Image 1 (cartoon, rainbow, N blue to C red):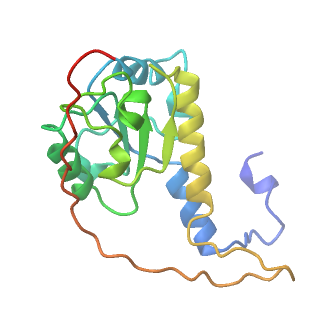
Image 2: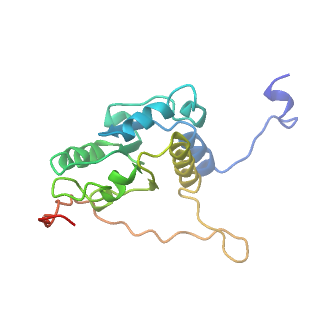
Length: 190
């Protein structure tokens, strides 16, 4: 009365290997928190029993970049902390994804100063932005589900108008380190 009753009589399941790999990746996301402010508290609440992030396959938070494939940047990032963020991103293994959680990580939020990075997407590639100050745990869960949708379509070419799969034209871009640009300082009250 197990899986055998659901399978065909010859016990063969057919699928594309790409879909099988994507299913296994999306079902076992290992997030690494990069929490620097109040968004980190909401990130912890998302992993608690009330919201249960584990039911989406992102159960165990990894604090080693070599064991993680999803970085959740939660909160403001200072200019001094930016090289650490870039280094951690470089140490993550491929494939890797990034969620920018909260207004501070996405745009600098209310901290429009020379010491706070005005959006981490200028320095590391971001896959999903989570709005809010701080965002609610439900919004972060939706972001994890968006990452899962991205993983589902990874390396699967889109269908053409005739319904047949077409190969993707993928341009390989060189990897490089982006140095932070100086931010102009505003003096006075606005």
